Image (cartoon, rainbow, N blue to C red; front, side, top):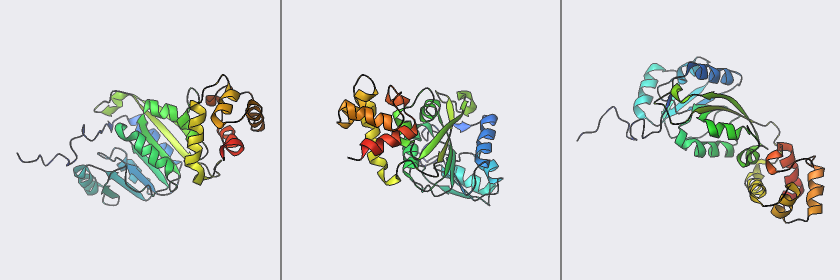
Length: 258
């Protein structure tokens, strides 16, 4: 049977995990957030161009990528002044000042992981699953994911998008997440992987109260754990989720580099 020429070699929109944004208030909010930034733009998952067209009107260097070659061809025809490429968001270089996009929900984790290990971009505005955006922004208390990235990035939750604001509608709501790279990192970037392990140990260690958790996670006695917490101004914290970014960075300097 001959292949359907309107169908991407990667499959249809369901196989590609595409849920196209149709919610105009969210589109306008994304554009407002991007307009506060400066420099070149990289759009991940351009789809039918719901964001690409208005982003092009910002008159900034713009590259838009999508894995569907048919949609890329149509966007190239409609926006001849924009660089539009067939590319995989999990592999394409993150070589712009600002990364923006409606991220395929099933690729949220690998794309975020790549972003947070890259030193190239400065700002990101991403539409992800609601729960991912909420947790990354630390809403409802700090999480291990938030703490692991906090020395280098700030996160803010910029809105919730109802499932009906996409086509086809996903099974969960979306969340709008803005990420900004810190101008002065709290921990050297070269120590990122070791620091992430340190945070994981702290969140997974057992103990009644934070001094006991620190003692067990870092292999120090309670007296040393209390001293470290007092030194970084975290003596009132009860659990790892109560620690602020500067607390984490201070504890890493006190106890992390073994």
